[in-house]
Length: 298
Image (cartoon, rainbow, N blue to C red; front, side, top):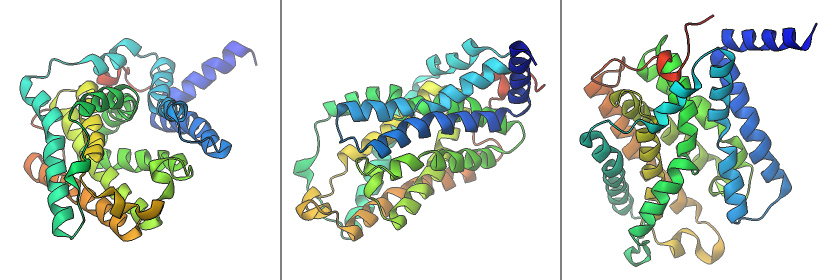
């Protein structure tokens, strides 16, 4: 068998198994890099953070390979990351809704007896950096794969809600190397906190689908929204001295912070399902594989 024949065979297999190939490549790319970091024992640093972010490019790498192997348009797929003409309403939602989520989180945390220290909150200017960093390197880069590829492909066979949950489960499992790395935020979490985080991921996947479908396939809006939700952790006024007394995390308070962080996302996700319906999660037809630059299945 010649090399060209093997290449043609590999491309044909990828074209026939687009979602499976995407997931395999996304996981392999990320797990090799982030798993290697966990194994290396590298201390937390800017270099470490940048490498973690680079590992987050597994989903777009997987999507790019599948679009190419399927004979699709990489330009069409990537253009979703530059789709900014979505109307002022949706930009307001993408930028401001995270603050509403934060307000709900704080109210629930305080009502549950969580200690707060508003004097420890970061400057508002940090938010601008967090949004920019989060959109291109700190989480938003994933969305060109999860939402810009996997979601529209699945939505051609399943409802928007079912597709969201399938993406959410895959997305959650993809984060496994972060739980194995003691230097990451996820690394020191007990199992109960990890499970609550997974609930947040599933609820967040519904919100991200709503944003993607409602904007006609703007991965840029989803990435900004994703970055905004992530940035809210910076502004949570929980008293750091109470959460981590003497450098040792308080298990109950950290679990409470995770629980009160998950509840608003779940409630909003349920509200979106009721208001928009599980089939589309939007007031318009959801984007299909053509948004991802894919031709009809081979």
